Length: 490
Image (cartoon, rainbow, N blue to C red; front, top):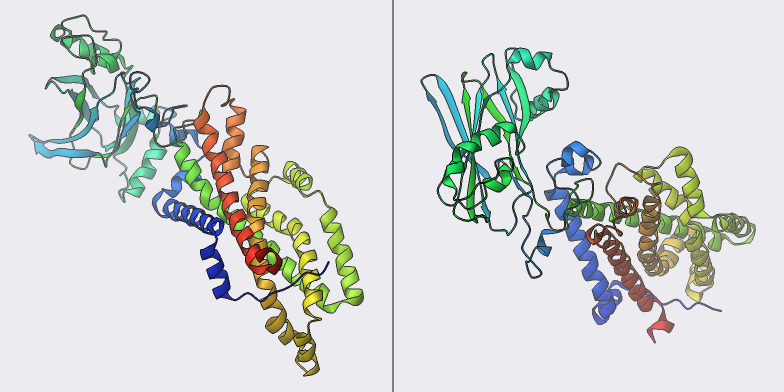
């Protein structure tokens, strides 16, 4: 069968996409994916990418929490949303010195409007101080105006910190370095957490039991603090956690402070069993998928064009030898080879790209070779040869422009295959485990029995993103093929 070739100018391609609803749909989806990638790279902290598999980075997040938007209350009471009050949401309400004591207070406010109590609360903090340890006081102001002092304690002395093993001093020193403030030899950096299960909190709450018309359970501070004093029910409204530090040296500072209210729903896409924010994983998976897909597609298409064009234009013995090599690569079981290489040597994202390019160019080379054979026998190409034009000039002036629309369509069709190949390796647990990819997220969901546990938010979003990306490039490739193929255009 003879393949017809029709020159396609840029204006023809643009007008063809404007007339094609499928092509426009593919472009819109691609723009959406590129927009997500740009937002992710410019707005999401790179630390979340590097620390995706670090449990300590996600310790403040809830485990297996459903997306927050499912908490609409149509089918029952609304669950408490997991809330992380950071320094950005908190504000410093006082910083002054009184009788030689440096007093620093920070407030963290939230509006609690849910039908269930927080499952817990915890207050992580990090301070740097000298020989005399500071005192930490924590107060909670409720919507009814009552203020409970739930914690009042001095921090460990420098001697205790030096003798204790397993202190988080190293992590805190990194925090100091980020702030541009290194602790001196006389100072120590202390990081810890105040948990709602702390016995001191329960003991401090006993003094407020007389304010309630019933007997509150002081062993559950997260319930007592958020309860109405008149009836045994949730008191909704604004709550403020006030952290006050009493320092005995002007050089002592607060390096970090947060307030975390535990809940069962969180974020746009919820969390997995490892407490990781799945929205961040899905977002980072987008530029990774586009990088893999486009790099592999462009690499394989360029190699296929050069290889097939050379074989078709040279012809004869050169063509015969090159096609036998091509047949060898086509016959290779690529996915099985990738699995074997991964098991033996392990794979990172760049090695995956290289291997997919190395094993993926053969099919496109055969098609390019067939078209090159046809084009070189066209009359205007023969006329160029008779006029003495060089082979390179003929190739770049007459053959490559004819092949470019086909190459673009091949690139579009190759992107989904590359993404699915990486997703397949990740799903089998054979891909790069250090970075978040959609396939890796699905692999971990399968290993954790997310389907059985009903954690649909761990399964549907990555699968949907894989399908959406593949659909985008498939529609673009289909439209390009219609534009460049005159038979299909008719």
